[in-house]
Length: 262
Image (cartoon, rainbow, N blue to C red):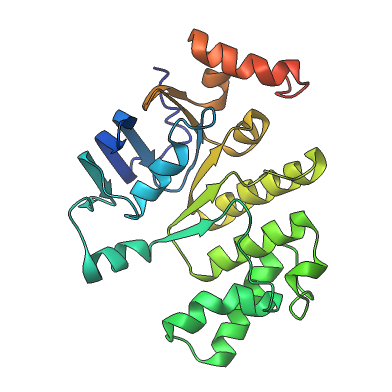
């Protein structure tokens, strides 16, 4: 496997996964998967449909329990954790869902502040201040009173990102953030994610099948194939991989006119 660019990656481990296995009846989805994600970096997890990318994300936040293996979040084992301890770990995460998952009956400001309202830790004025700040970060200040149905697909993605940021997580999970967007808007969302990661120093984990997106955002790219990580490295190392499965995966995007030359 390709090495890690130590000039970009820190020495702090956000997530450590060892020999992770998951079966769904006869379907052995994760087959001894090993993965380390460094804090303050953007890691893209790529691979074809049905390879276990989203299943892996659900394990990271404790929504699924492995059949075997170990998962550590900032050094804390979570595979046998439940109750209040698991909730405390989950508060360190936020998720940006593939379909944005906004509530159409709520305004933009209500969607962004929903998690804070449910936590009941801040008064209304404080929540409004956080919402304005996060909408400003994603370029949507002034859209507070609009409804999701009045926004474009790209703007909805920005609202979903603002909602995640409002929870002040240490780790943000992005599930196919550019799905359904045209190439120009997809590039805007990629740029936004990269800028926020650099400004806020959050740990970003991006599940995607879009190699252009992975190359634009990530410090580190990992590929899942048959339930394992078969290749990982910096974007440059990944692009120049000699692994025939990786080469085939990238070439499919090249044939479609994607994956621009460095």
